[in-house]
Length: 354
Image (cartoon, rainbow, N blue to C red):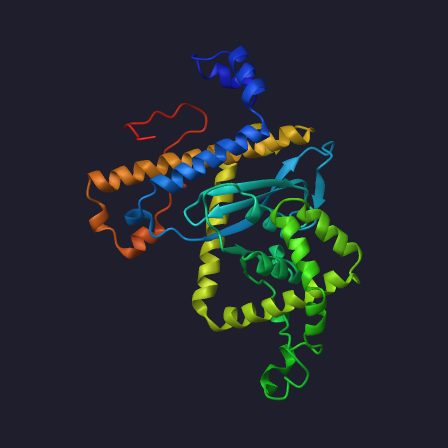
């Protein structure tokens, strides 16, 4: 909206005050540290009786934000039919976004997913991640398995997925599965030969000595690389095991769907907060774009923080917790904004223990 319009709506500050604060304090590193502090505060103050047990899962998804064509990061998105940039979110079960990443429309979502899981810098423990169809691949399954994460995607094209047999002759005992079993079996010898190299690349990702996007681009340009082939074979193994569990157990499909619904709810709140300039990024500098995205993340996390404390206080003071059923608690979310007007000032009607 601009600093002048913000100063005109608040008599306590002037344009010069806001300009000084922006130049001195509003930087991507400071905003990331602020988000980490707010996320850790939410995780610390959250009551288990209201929000349930703390989970070690998260969901990730991307959201397209409009941007001008002069922007060097702007690209045409073939799926959303528009020019802009992508934001990749990592959202916890109770609508807490602990990491965000600005990316181009054609960059790899798998690389963003791995990068966020490794370097979110919060107190959140993650061992499984829910993604949609575009956030998974055989290479993604392999990297997540070696790094200690469980990749759990929702397959839109489940009918075209293939199961890989461990060795020749596995099709005969299962004649009903022959249409979905791939012809070539898993090359276990290649995995054994390149195991040390695969661990080397995973260690580089874990200690942030190499960018995930750079490694995946290197492999995509040379798919005959032996390490790429070994990772692809390992990914086929992990993916086949997951597909069997995904098809057998209905609770796994419900768990993944529930996690991805939280991300969709997070994306729906973006239009409510990020409404200035028609919801478009009109900055050409990458640093300014990161400031806009991380400021959006900070505002939504602060909204979740305030709502979490207000809901908890209401539950304790008015004894609503005893009246809540299991379905009521399951539908409870701190990401609500109907009680806030984006054009004015929001005053708390109670003192919160911040």
